[in-house]
Image 1 (cartoon, one colour):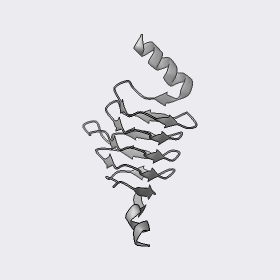
Image 2 (cartoon, helix red, strand yellow; image 1 turned 180 degrees about the horizontal axis):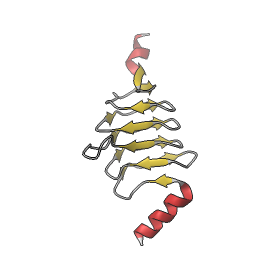
Image 3 (cartoon, one colour; image 1 turned 135 degrees about the vertical axis):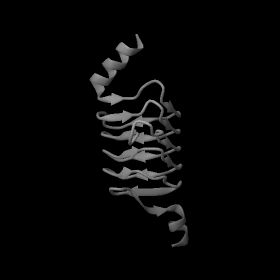
Length: 124
């Protein structure tokens, strides 16, 4: 029964989140469609995903990403490979994250680069 329901929801919404994904409470998906999450990925609490987000691997034998709490993904953001995203991170639209991102950061670009952190604001 699960597989039939899974296929129906995936077809109807364009969202592919297998039941094996570890997801903290408070996941918000804005503007459904095109969201794909690797079956072994981990998402922390209160994350926000916008349309077109992919959280997956770069190659078959890769480990999936581990996402911290309160991470916000812009539209079409991609997080690929064995990376860790810290807590309270903003990932810009169309950003490709291939490396670990520290907590309290904003990352943008292809490939993604950290453009600000809370420590930047504290020193200003």
